[in-house]
Length: 111
Length: 114
Image 1 (cartoon, each protein chain N blue to C red):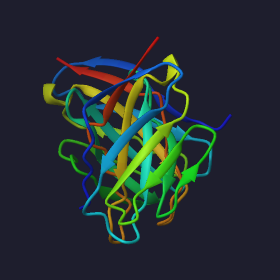
Image 2: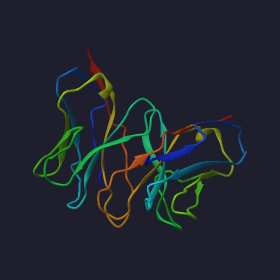
Image 3: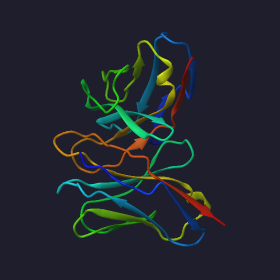
């Protein structure tokens, strides 16, 4: 199963870009990278996903390296409400639909 | 409003007393799943269902049962709860298939087993 590695915590100043890294060196060719976040003890919230190309939506940008072994989630202008735990997950291969969450990165945005 | 609804939000029970946590979604999603969340362990998948009458074990299925008799409902059953099942539980759903639709999560159920 493809595993992900994320730093346990990061800080970011309000208004600055937050760059959250994720390592997934064993990712298979047809697996997608998903990012979710969890604010306090609420249900996780989908942010963005990608396969090979960089992706952008209203919430964030996702940069995936050419070899697909790592990716970076970018919040271009972090706000205090972006303080949360961010999960990078990779869909398990074969013909199943397990989605394995790790322990994520706790992002603290400070004023 | 599109949503995943879990009930109850909080539940305190005693060891061995059977309980059911309900989950319902109104988005006509084929896929539904249950997760538990414990400090330091992140989210771990308990069971998932690709469609009606199709269920599969996740990473931590022991002590849990599920059923998927209808598309919208996916209850989590603890036949004989034990204290190590004290946890925060989340239900989630998404459209089916092997592509990349996003998961929608419920607001969670905090379970305490005494």
